[in-house]
Length: 491
Image (cartoon, rainbow, N blue to C red; front, side, top):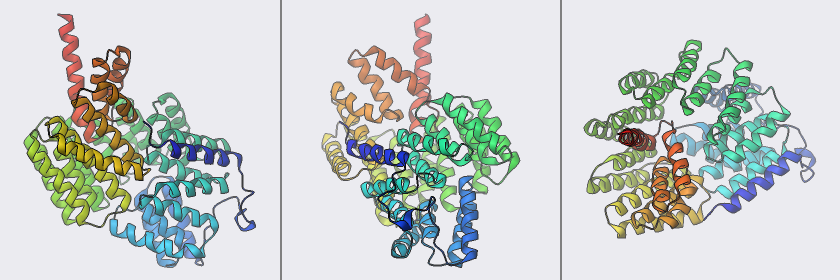
C-alpha cells in the first residue's frame, strides 16, 4: 500500500513544468530569470549574498550569522527571516522568524511568497501546499540554480531522493559549473545506491573547489556510506587541515564508530562537542557518542549517557532531542516496562517544549513506531494496536515521508510478530532503507520461501554504513551473525 502516490504525482508533474520552463502563467513582475531579493538596505543585501555563498558551501554557522546580520540591517527582510527559520536549530528562533516572514509575505515578490509558503508550510506539517509552492517556484525560475539547489537539498532531507535527482540533474545540465548542485546531486545518487554516479559528481565538485572544506567533508561521507572507511578518513582529515573549525571531526568520529573503533570515536566526538556552535549541535554529537556504547554492547554506559543527554536537552528546551534520547533508550532497553516508561517520557517531552509542528509530529511518529513494535514483541497487542491506529490516522492526514515510513515500519513489525509475513512484506518494502525494517524483511522473505529477495535484503542490510541509532542497534550484530553462520557452514 503506497499512501503517498498522489504526492509523488504532484512532484513529478511539477518537475516536468520546471524542466520545460513553463512561465507563461506568471505576470510580468515574475518574469525575472532568478528569484528576487526584496530589501531596502544595501547592507542587508550584502550580508544576505554572503550568507548564501556560505550556505552553498554548507558552512551553516556562518550562513546563520550573516542572515541574522541581514535581518538586523532590515527587520522587514522576509527572505532572510524564512531562511533563518529554515536553517536554525533553535526552536524559539525558528518559530519567531517563521511567523514574522509570513506576516511580511504580502510585501515581497511572487517568487519570495512561494519560498515563504514552501518553507513555512513544511515546518507546520502541511506538506501538500508546501510541495506545491516549491514546485511552482521551480517552474517560475527554471534557470535559477540557487532555487534548484535549495529544492534538491530539501528533497534529500525529506528522503525523496528520486525527485531530488530529477531536479538537480536539470540544474547541473543548465549550470554544469555550479558546485552546490553537484554536491546535493552526489548525495541523492548515493542515497539511491548509485555510488558510481555519486563519486563522479563528487569528483567534479572537488575539482571546482579543492581548497574548500566541504567538498572533502562530503566526499568522506559518501565514501563511508560505501564502506570505504580509510579513504573516507583521508578526505575528512583533509577537510580538517583546510579549516579546523568546519566541523569534520564529527565525520571522523562517525567513521571510527562504524569501523568498530568505539574508543577512538568517543575521543573524536569529545573534540567535536567542545567546539560545537550551538546547544543543539552539542546534544546531537552527544547522542552520536552514546551510540558507541550501544555498539560496544555496554548497556549501563549507554543508559547513563542517554539519561544525561535527555536531562541536558530538557534544560535547553530542546524537546525534539530530549524525545529522541528517550526513544533510543526505549529501543535499546532489554525489558518492556522500562521501555514503556521511556516512551512516555518521550511523548511528554514533545508536549513540554516549543517545537515546530513538523518536528513534533515526525518525532511522535517515530516514538509510536517503537511503541507499537515493542508492545507487539511483548504480546501487549492492545497497546500495539492503539499505537498503530494512531500512526495510521497521522499517515492519512500528513504527507510527511517520515510519518509515512514510520507507519509502514510499525505495521510491518506488528504483522511479523503475528506471523502474517505476506502482508508484512508489503509494508516493510515501503521502508526498505531502514535497518529495523530490513532485518524483518530478511525474516519475512525467508519464512515465505523468497530466497532471492532474502539474499538481496541481507546484502543491503549488511552494507548499511549510516551513523544512526537504528544502524547501531541492528547492523553490527547482524554482521556478526552472518560470520557465525558462515563459520558453522564450513565445519
